[in-house]
Image 1 (spheres, rainbow, N blue to C red):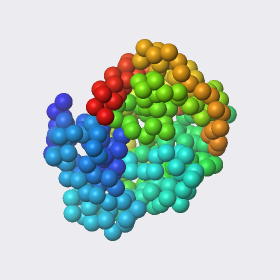
Image 2: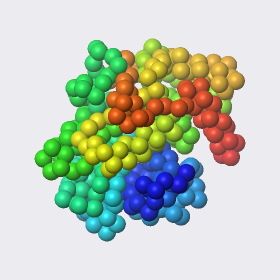
Image 3: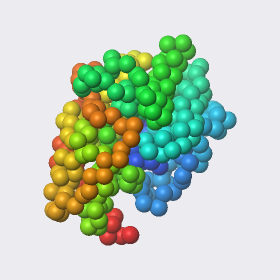
Image 4: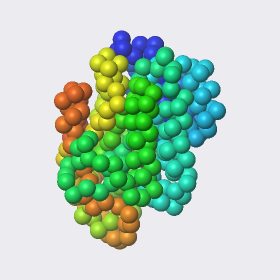
Length: 324
């Protein structure tokens, strides 16, 4: 829908070809924004962006390249920045920690440093993660919980979080941080994640391998709700001067891995076909978020139930798997 706030507003999205980035880019284009995207991969063959790319200024590059980030910001003068680019797969971060640190930590300080003293920048939204909190006994996690990641991906997000606070408190960079539950929805091709992998296995009649013991508990939030949260946050930052804050986004309806798997197979009208291999390492058994602050301060709330979100997601993947 057209939105005067976003009409002709210059928006930079790092990682615009990724799962969340592509959804956010498409939503902002529909609102009239002028979108600039930077990503290591351009023109992914299957993407929800499809024909929308022709309306995006696409730059191929790595956020860990400081000269590139400086050049993009100086040239395009974005008013709003959504920093989403990251090494987003926990298992890959465990295998190649330095790669994850360069992308998630150095990439974040590059964006923040390039944004320092730029008067044309109105808002910088940094994508952190629920993993930034590390493990806590008190659940659900609120924004006041300490950041104490213990493994490569978790630590990289804890550090990115603290860097954002540093640049706000020391240099007045207009920044806020998002910490989301497990995001799922159409367009996620990271099949190491539970939801797309379970859907793939259900559609193709393969056996789903569950890495954990099936009892790990998480919250799962539909991509459309997360996109709305990002957009609402940026608007409130500019209109109400909300800076230096972190916001959790969650559907506040935690579920076990096995419980979610059963729900996916049921939604796909398939008989459960999974094997619990219980080989997960360095993962937190129970982790889910409170979104009370986002509800109170931003007026945000999820509108997609887990059942509705899964139905939309499964129907999309069915069409995709018929094409490939």
